[in-house]
Length: 95
Picture 1 (tube, helix red, strand yellow):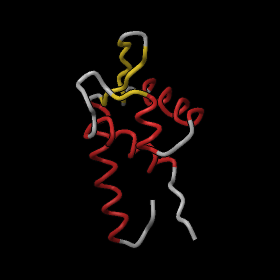
Picture 2: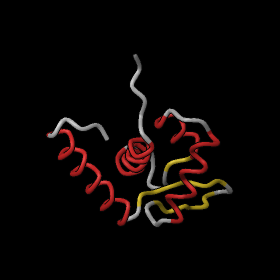
Picture 3: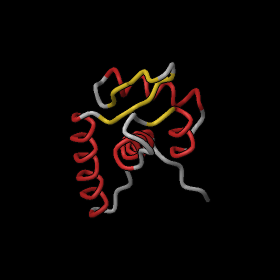
Picture 4: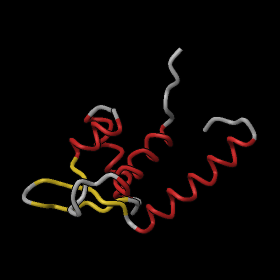
């Protein structure tokens, strides 16, 4: 049986991708994030809108297209997420 990712896991994947795997310093395109996070365009659009409004991602307008970079708050959130995930894993909990 396939294990489904939680909403928090998807957010963690998106933040980690914008932190670690950028092809250039201008940020990650929506298409790049769709491929890396393996989710639909409509779903990632909603998530990106939320992450930008919460200050976890920065939206950049480069040459008529939007690109996304992780903010300092996003880095702090991602570190806390990893800490909590490790803590929960030690107790056998899936987050």
